[in-house]
Length: 401
Image (tube, one colour):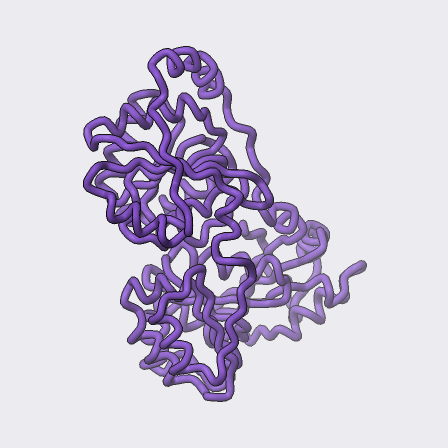
């Protein structure tokens, strides 16, 4: 897995979707001590970045003896980012009695080599044909000079008038440049790239999912692991320099059975990248003529009208599930000898509660966190204001999740 944002989000999704599964996120920009405490608790799944996982292993803070499954997600990207040696270090620390899975959109030779080295009689499973998802996408390209790109981008967005669009650039500097120019043109847009703080990237991506703005200008940090079904257009402002990235980028549209549109700008010195993509996807991207000035002018009014209408807000996946869960904080923990059995016993004595209504219990030094399921959180919260836990009334408060 790669990217602090994706690690944190994946652990969160697992915990919310599978209510009794505790997933711990292990990554660099998070306090080591907090992660160490979580690993000491009962944890079912650890989602992490190789380097930080190795740190915990070398310091003896991560017990690998009971690991039964190793899943390497985005395996092709792992190779590109130089994580192979770290992955091999982790593999050598694990028991040989395990199941190993590598997940990858593309399957370069290096991944096959890794499979054959660390997997016994590996089985290759294709969920769907490699380019099947791409068949739901209308792919077009425009030849353009570098200096004319922003003008072409404006013409194409007026012509296409997308509901939701990602504009991909190859560098964060180009993202900043395009974002600044579109902002001056009054586009409802935001930007995302690796030079931004994690919290800012998460906020921008969540707002894009919710439909607060129509245009997201991004580097490839947004091309992988982002699950948004309603993106109507992808525009490659810069053609990607490797063929796999093209497939990952345009795969952000044409999802959930919908048709999508992918448009790529190509300068005259980028024919090598274009030819590689053509060979990889097995067909040529259709070359289009730049729309005439008359066509663009005739569509400007319709474009401006949509730009001034706030996009319909999309309900986030899992929103209804989150409404069913309330997380409570109790001001007692390990130092006051609080145990999970104390929590379960108290809660199950509340009228209408059973063990099936109790989710993850996380007991730390001076606090305990408990998830109440099935829309019973408010009732339990009210009852705990007058119900002792382990012989004493405790301060119980609600926690945002």
